[in-house]
Length: 48
Image (tube, rainbow, N blue to C red):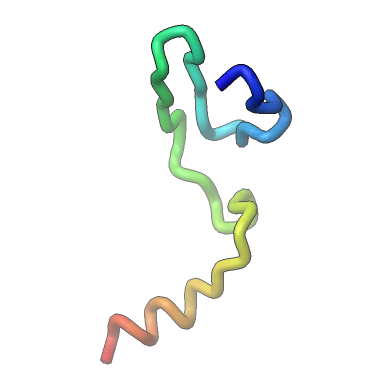
């Protein structure tokens, strides 16, 4: 955990390195996700 760059942790997450814990502070908006996700394709896939 020492090697984790603090800039790499999104604003909606909290990291407690000393206690090896993480906390989701809020549900991220689609625009805040750092991975490309097409929500419409996911909805269509599970609607079948």
